[in-house]
Image (cartoon, rainbow, N blue to C red):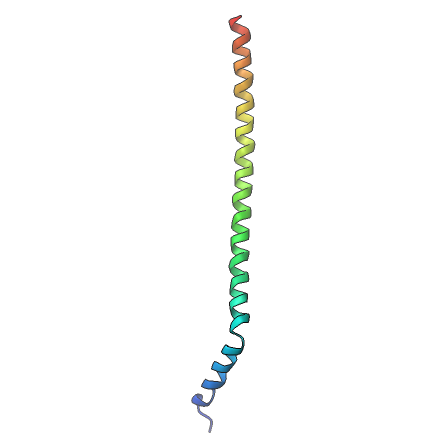
Length: 71
């Protein structure tokens, strides 16, 4: 009958051999998550810039209209 202690060193050896692979896989998953979050933030900033650009254009048009009315 085999006991679980016989599998212990074998599993630790497997883990040691694949340590770099596991670390790289975790790093890739983490970097993918960071990349997705950055993409979301960039899209939100793009929308905000477009909104502010429209507001700025409207403000400039109103100032020009006010200047023409005061003449």
